[in-house]
Length: 238
Image (cartoon, rainbow, N blue to C red; front, side, top):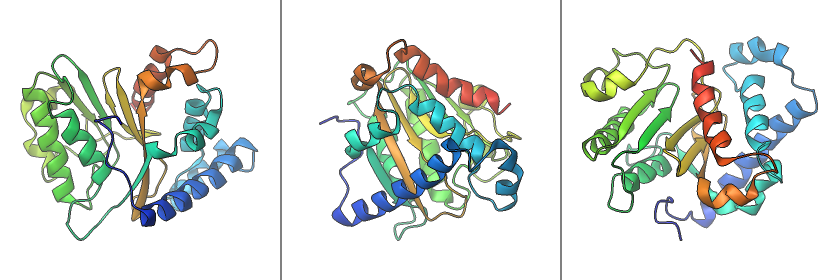
């Protein structure tokens, strides 16, 4: 088993995962069929709901793979879920586990480029925000280049105290939403989140072991293009 992957999920979590995945597919297929169009984006913004630009980004993502969105059915254990506000006051547990393992001896962080694309950056769970920042600072100490891109403001709690080397590589206060939120660990792993509203309590994540997924790519698609796709999502938000 991949030592970087988050821990396995319980049977109860699987019920939540399947519900979230079915909910994603409903909107994803609505976009693919033309029932949801890019012209609808403002309507979805008014409702504070994931809109067509996000689902278009996922069609572009799945287009890298031979089986497109059915890739998920082939690799169901890459999925995980978390409750935004839980009893331990630390949400986003798959993300925290992922960052903890990147910071551990299980991953050689020195010289690696670690990038996070976020939205509110856990505004509703400040303890989670602080824990994420602490892992990024650990990764910096271990020699990684670390950068965070988010719509959250520089002046918000916790963010204003990020160490200067990370601040210099990061960008907060983005005006546009990054279409897919993710953490990219150099050329090795990507953990992404599926669309959700900021008020959604349950969220769905997927961990990609990029090297293991390389055989799943369509003919003519490359690992480098897949990784660059995530970088381009950030550039599109500037």
